[in-house]
Image (cartoon, helix red, strand yellow):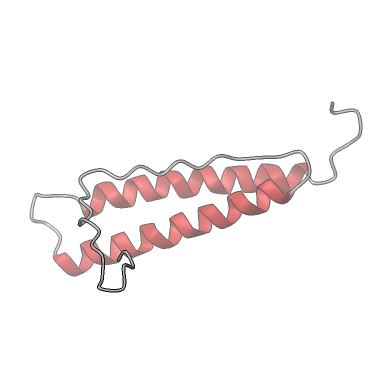
Length: 97
């Protein structure tokens, strides 16, 4: 179904490359921030986590732009490890918080 030329092929390729680089950088930052050898302090760990979060947001924005281009799509999967979520409770009005 690729009979007509894709005028956005270069843009799609650039976005795919940027998404891949963002994902690898996020993994590297999380690995760095989770070091337990005591060689980095808490503030540096938090800065690394904030930077990783911004890169994840940039990756999601790039994936959305890629999806909008005709004939392209990209799937982003995010997994959480070791995160516990507090149980939901209801208020007196019955609203779940």
